[in-house]
Figure 1 (tube, rainbow, N blue to C red):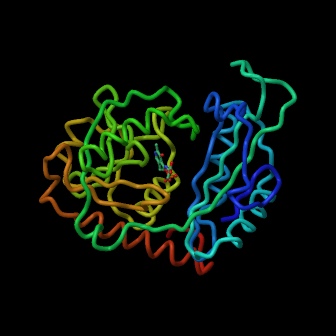
Figure 2 (figure 1 turned 60 degrees about the vertical axis):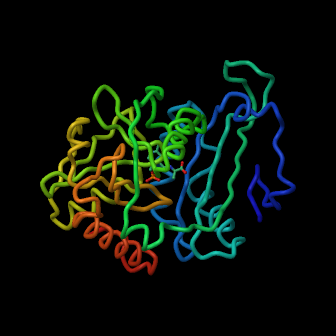
Length: 288
Ligand code: PDD
């Protein structure tokens, strides 16, 4: 497997970083996960824009222009056997003597790898998945895609321990997102999306979903979602770049709706798959 590290493509076995890297010491860095379909990076410009926002959020200069990123990502995709992949892109503040304060005159560490993308199988989408809830105890800048993911790791593990797929997070009685995904609910045939804020990651898939419902005149609202609304939802949907759109059919052991993926999920997933196909074939880049 060939990876990219600080200006070079090399086999992963030969890739090392110094132990004083601030990513290792402090989790001082940001990342992106970019899906690739038929060797084309999906919504790349949106991922690069979010990367820039994350870098701004941690006061780190972008080491590359978007054109340079596109070139590097293209090369990385070419090295991989699979047509469908997901790219993990990671930038840390670099290597320096351990001190919390930003060091001066150091170069960031830039790492990228690509893996085969296995989207959820059809059978799972027909059955749906289970979720649990937990209090969102993360920091106040969840909009930054920071590599310091310990709270997300601990929250996600609660789901794994409970035999579920995702932990849905609640803060002050309102839905924020999942431990590694965005969450939507459907109530009385209307999609409800929690509004973007510092308390959730502005998902690229979240944006695609909102574009699709807008362009196809499906009913939706972007507004805070209370815990009670989540618990009594007709449908709950999870979105992420690697999981796409998944239906959640049970929450904390209680069935959602009739315990099967609902009509809104089926419609939205159909629109999403169609939009993906068109984008891959390069026929269309708008979600209408
Ligand atoms: N995570 N919220 C959180 C906390 C996430 O970690 C993710 C995705 C999302 C969905 O964002 P997007 O649609 O842009 O993938 C929301 C990625 C996939 C990860 O960390 O592996």
